[in-house]
Image (tube, rainbow, N blue to C red; front, side, top):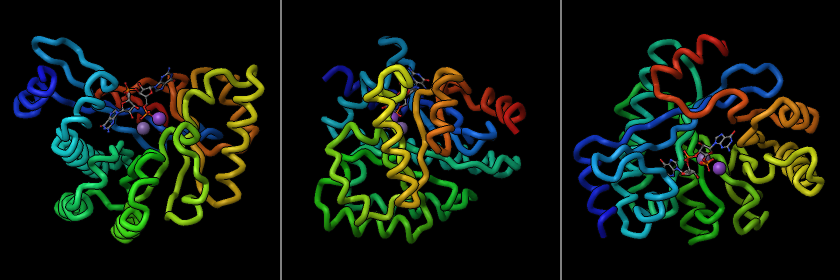
Amino acid sequence: MKIDHAMREALVDQRFRLVYQPQVDLRTGRLIGAEALIRWSDEVLGEMLPAQFIPIAEETGFIVSLGAWVLREAIRQGEIWQAEGIDIMMSVNVSAVQFHQANFVDSLAKSLSSSGLPPNRLELELTESILIQNVEETQLRLDALVDLGVRLAIDDFGTGYSSLAYLKRFPIHKLKIDRSFVQDIPDDESDAAIATAVINLARSLNLRAIAEGVENETQRRFLLDAGCDEYQGYLCSPPVEPADFVVLVSKLG
Ligand code: G
Ligand code: G
Ligand code: MN
Ligand code: NA
């Protein structure tokens, strides 16, 4: 497959990079963390979006190498920022294929132990689809990650299989309210009800709630009144290059 081959070359040629989107406190606007998002500008194919190549990487298994690179690179950047006094959470997307690799926890433990990023400053964004496969094995793996000190968030919450049983069973720290429930609040009553319900669910289970895709002050206000903890979205900033992120840090405090 053409894209698969191009991706393998791009990894060797260092044509992948990470951009970072701030995650901020809804109430104070202060910076809490950064979500690392992969970018690829290919010499031939041009600027490729994750939606175009991540699904292919998952199908071919290349996501295992790519995901390992993403984790190492995000940890490296987090370590640099820690050394500069920028003490924030580094959130990294993990794909199901990557998570279920036998050596996933060991190789993450190695990357962390040879780095200056405290494990509790690394957050893994897991999808609901990860949590419904091999429940016994998943449980062991999540417990091992929490033993390392790593934090766990559920990405795109509410769009997956929505079995709430795993929230009781697994050591999750945070729910990320999917952008699709945020974009039309407060006008869309169903979305407003779903966002509010997720926030209440998080609160009653002692989890943090973060809203994705917040673009305007009306949405921020609604989420704040509903008791949401954090947000991420264009209202604060799109994902940016590391040098621009540092400029944001000085603005957000
Ligand atoms: O950055 P953008 O909004 O285009 O990302 C689109 C999708 O690609 C998101 O759902 C995001 O979770 C996914 N994505 C971005 N970077 C990574 C990554 O490093 N690993 C995985 N598995 N998914 C990613
Ligand atoms: O991993 P996840 O599915 O959360 O991916 C986040 C994606 O959402 C990224 O591709 C990012 O570019 C995109 N995004 C981030 N903030 C906003 C926003 O405010 N509005 C819209 N439309 N997209 C956003
Ligand atoms: Mn994400
Ligand atoms: Na998401």
